[in-house]
Amino acid sequence: MKLALIEANKSYIKDDVPVGAVIVKNDKVIAKAHNKKEKNKTATHHAEILAIEEACKKLKSWHLDDCILYVTLEPCLMCFGAILESRIKKIVYATNSEKFGFVSSTNNILKEIINNYNIEIVEGLYKKESQKLLSDFFKTKRK
Amino acid sequence: MKLALIEANKSYIKDDVPVGAVIVKNDKVIAKAHNKKEKNKTATHHAEILAIEEACKKLKSWHLDDCILYVTLEPCLMCFGAILESRIKKIVYATNSEKFGFVSSTNNILKEIINNYNIEIVEGLYKKESQKLLSDFFKTKRK
Image (tube, rainbow over all chains, first blue to last red):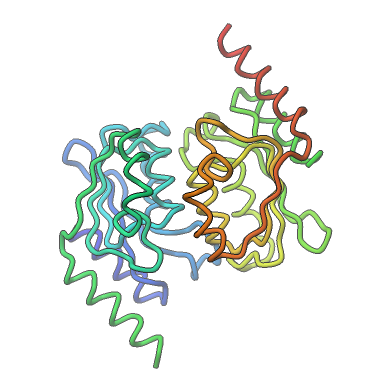
């Protein structure tokens, strides 16, 4: 998650919402990415999507079965869908996204989906650090 | 939707699940794409994602507010999320996907989301044609 926070900081510097993602397989980092939605002017370029695409490229496969995704913010609907599509087995995220998060924020909706895909979800690792980066970003934006 | 079916056929030929997508703005086609998940070995390379990315590139913006997406199969969770992220105003899809569709198949889940985003959804245009293409594909695969 420390690496994901370093990635998130790259978005911060480039004026994109600071979110970073890292994919690990067998204790090795195989992909790192940060949110580039504004920079690339592309709706799909969230950190998770870019990290998944990099991991697929690295493994030459769309199956990321034994992979763990670390992300600094709770995934949105699109990113959660991409995580399921890629068969990632575990998501660890730092802090929840009240407005756009799709994992903890909509628990009842997801229970069935999560059971079907047998995916493990962990929340709260480096929560304060991620929250601080996000709130600093939005404070600057409001100014 | 005819153009989307032509796109879907390109996936069929290349041994990918035949799904095609077209994005229209002010009655002009601004993006066309077909499913390349197997070809590109990338979990995110569904027709809708690729079409959205092309449209963003064309318009130099992640906002696709006045755009309509035509797709030959009901979008999955990831693609529906990407449609919302890109602010597409209307989705027209040919046939529903019982297993992985997220739009009609999970109506109660979506009502709130659809209301929040004010997105219009139309189902059934060229339904038979899309169903035939898909069933032909899966018949060949089973052989």
